[in-house]
Length: 243
Length: 263
Image 1 (cartoon, each protein chain N blue to C red):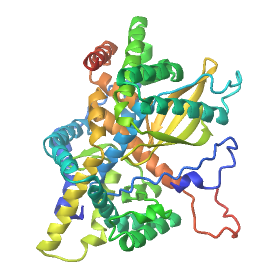
Image 2 (image 1 turned 90 degrees about the vertical axis):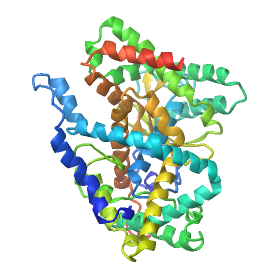
Image 3 (image 1 turned 180 degrees about the horizontal axis):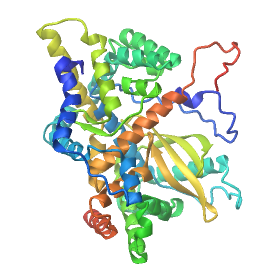
Image 4 (image 1 turned 180 degrees about the vertical axis):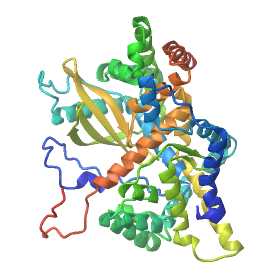
């Protein structure tokens, strides 16, 4: 993990310098390791799902037109993360927390943009009605995935690391810790959408939420004659089952 | 594991390949359908039909055996004891990690691994307690699949191996090399050693599975195509790990030494 500390990064003066030295899972299990890797992904994915949320418009009034500054993106994630932690660790009953998380997703995450990304090339072939239905279902599924684990994340804490400019926005590194779990590295990709910073991806332990989701949908579609309607009915089923 | 002495070690590599040839490969979309063809090539999973069979087998084994055993393990064995087991297993794996750190040309990482082994084997009571982590030597992974990646060998198509799970030719070969190269597997013959080897493998599997009891289920439940989701997660995670090693320019040169030319 020392990579986060190596000195050759003068390129990003905006970097927030809380250095992360996440003492990684002390594991190093056995050559059963494929298994263990899987696990790591799993953990990552989860943190994603649960924390893959956020966005606070009031955090920093970012300049119009100018690309989002690293410090602003970091501040945005700091504020968003604080809010999530407050909700998860708060005393409210679960339904109230679920509502609060839902509000955070809607305010801080570019749900429509992520949804479009996840549909990939099929977005163009979908009819306007299908797009609208897909967007609404995608949001519901995302919210469900995020809120489903609120209980399990009690005691969660996070620390902000570097903010590094990327092609699509600013990647803000965080280390997420929760009791009984190895610390997880979670990176947040933030971009200005409609004049305010929004989260457009969450990358946990190297696995991107939207890339993973897109390959899931793509594979599903390729096994269902590339039929977007089939995807929509599968999503409907997911929502119904969870609901 | 080295537990899987010579023949079982090779089996996971050969069996899926052999079956793949018998079972046939995935059918590529026609070249006229450019986007579908591009997507197919990007997925790079020509053995998908076979891989899916093994995914199903592994999933069934997991549901029937591994997961219940891991659940029982977490119920029966108290958390501190489990952590001790986890640490011991990690410590036993450090020789292989050290060798790979060195083969990757990462002196700082190798130094960290070496110190971890020294400290944890002694102060840490034969690895039971991860003292080194608190002393500033956090654990990291290094396997021969990653080493080959650092050497520039491509990952190749996706493979889903029986028992071992998601992989690719490079990682599968790397796994075999790590097992064969584990010094703990070199000495001693006879029943006692074999029993110990297999125990380490078995406990390693249970330990690894118990680490993600709360995680795999939700992924399987929320994915429309769990196989494709695990395939994507595996590759992304491996690539990130390799990128992390490549970006690790920590060195052991003293601070007063003129900065090295690289980066």
